[in-house]
Length: 167
Image (cartoon, rainbow, N blue to C red):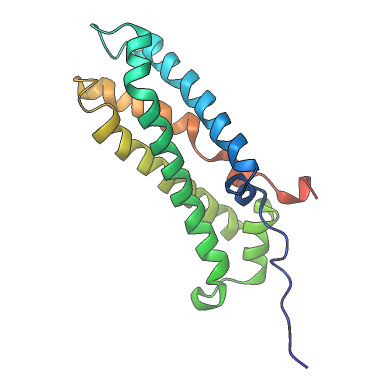
């Protein structure tokens, strides 16, 4: 008789954010959060002297939103690869269960999840610093502050949610 592994049968809650129809809620929620963050950045960090907040918002929001989604997907792909390539990279069932079901049940799972979140943050900063705000915020220190603030607030924090809370 064949041995069948069923330990990955429950999707991690964070992966559900990328499936229809939940993706529509994810897109809308990210857009709203990014909108609030861009406006807050404008008033807190004063990144532009010549543009009012609405013009600043209009020139940056779509890029912040799209790049944020791309960075979240990069982080999710890393975790999906850990799950899918478990045997190849030598991760135990305990670690995979931690990534998929309860991040706080395994130290290595939490380390991998936080690493994927930090990689997402790196890409949020990279994309926004070099593309979204490159021509919009001339002062480099202010640009760094804005992109770091955006990255910190918009990290894919849902990666840390235990799926067991929902099932």
